[in-house]
Length: 136
Image (cartoon, rainbow, N blue to C red; front, side, top):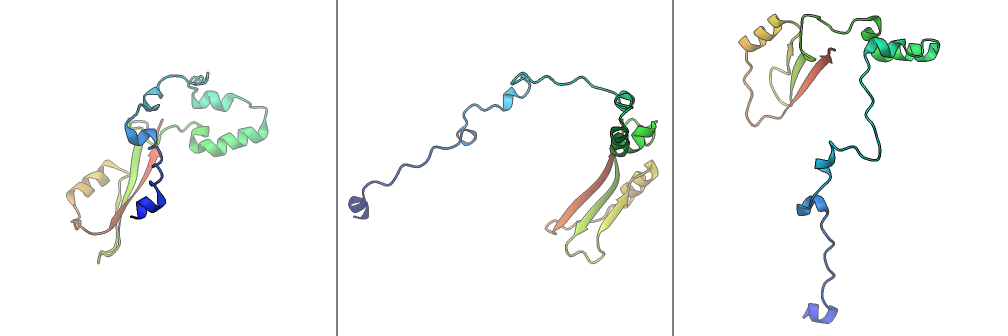
C-alpha cells in the first residue's frame, strides 16, 4: 500500500567501475601516459656532484642522504641485501611478560632469535613493529 501511495522507489545509483568488474586502468600502469618520461637512474655520487656551487642545496642533499653523502653507501659492504631488518618488536596488549624485542644486527642475533622462539597466543591482540635500513 505504501508504494502505491508514494510511487516507485528511486533507482539505485550506478556501481563504481571497480565494483562491477569492468575494465580498469590497473593494467595500464606499464604504459606511458600523458607524455611523462621516467628520468634515467642517477648514482648518489653523481647526484651530489650536481649543483656544487649552491651551498644551501649541497647542505640539503647532505642532510637528506646522511652517510651516503660521505660515500658510505652500505652498512656492511659484504652484505648483499638491499633491505636489512635491524629490529623486530612484537607489541602485546595483555602479555604478562610484556613486549618481545629481537635485535637483528648480526647473523648471531638472527641465530639467537631462531633458537629462542616465543609462544604467541592465537587470539591475542598483537602488533609487529619492524625497523629496517636500506643499502645501495
